[in-house]
Length: 469
Ligand code: NAD
Image 1 (cartoon, rainbow, N blue to C red):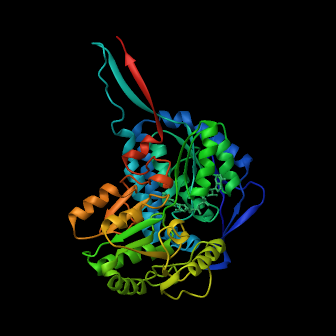
Image 2 (image 1 turned 45 degrees about the vertical axis):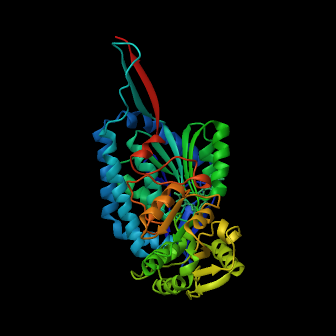
Image 3 (image 1 turned 180 degrees about the vertical axis):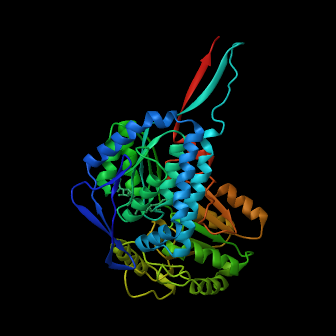
């Protein structure tokens, strides 16, 4: 058991009204970390530290900012094994994927370390001769980051790295289910020489809400459920505060009759079940062309049976537990709503949920409409690509999608018509490269994108300059 602390002005500190425990979802009697429950007071201290650091950070020349971000990447790399083990223990992510997450953190920091010296802004021809007109990107100031538990290090970093690279300073409010991961991230930031530029307030919803409300926080970048995202959007709109909300999905995989069915089954099984279906991009609906449905189900059963369920710390494990009792209860209630096509046994301890494929419901059913965030896949059939696309688009979400086919014309039709921010062909719905734009359409996002060069759009504001000599 560790103590997970706040990070304020470069110091790891206690503070708040009481505390909370972060539990091991594989063995919930085990407390992974005890953390202080941040309140308005800790948020105010952290925002103050970030405000004080802002002027000097924004004026730090590009190479100086790059040096801190490279140092942060090195600090994470140096503790990679320990950080991956913390992710596996605290949020139940299988260790192979947890190592991948830590590697992604390093890649993200190295990518954005180059950003402060890359060209930014445009020279714009003037209406009159002889004037110089150009646009500049300026940082916003103190930015509040509110993050979920499922990528407890990568999501904070895919927000913090572009924010810092563009000259902002930060207060992060991580999930209460990943307090240790946030604490360890804070330790690596300190090791990299960051002080008030990056602050962390541990806590639950009220600490996030205090961050949104704080007048010196100029923008909020949120990732989490659509229910919380909606509250944050309303609050930010009322305060006229810049915000981005990246939320859930009901991601679809379409399998056409001409697809390599064994390959398609492996992709669908991996997308739906790995990390117990707890990626925002996890496959939660599969729409299969009716003529191959029987054959595909047989392949899918084999593929799911090939994904070991068990202790996330074991390298072979593909499916660990779900995060908490509420999620465990919700999923076990949901599986009773459909007809079981296939189910794999899971350990009878902790928050393990059996990987399950459910059929017997139509595309309008709850099982095909609402995010479950667990290893439960809803099985649907369609008579044609056209019908499959209609079903695929029939949800309020639009995060990621996949199509399995060998027909390039079908792939092009799907790319044109599918309503999703991340669209994949013969690949599962998860696993977007860390330097490519990431985000959703419709109810999955407020419309901005994270990661890659496009992330700097959120963390900057334009100034248009005209000089008449
Ligand atoms: P959540 O909405 O419960 O919590 C997210 C964060 O918001 C936490 O830090 C929480 O403490 C905070 N919070 C809760 N109430 C708040 C309030 N009123 N004001 C301010 N902050 C508040 O989500 P979760 O369970 O941690 O994460 C799972 C969800 O995240 C899923 O829906 C998943 O699809 C989504 N997600 C989306 C992406 C993406 O990029 N689109 C990535 C990962 C996860």
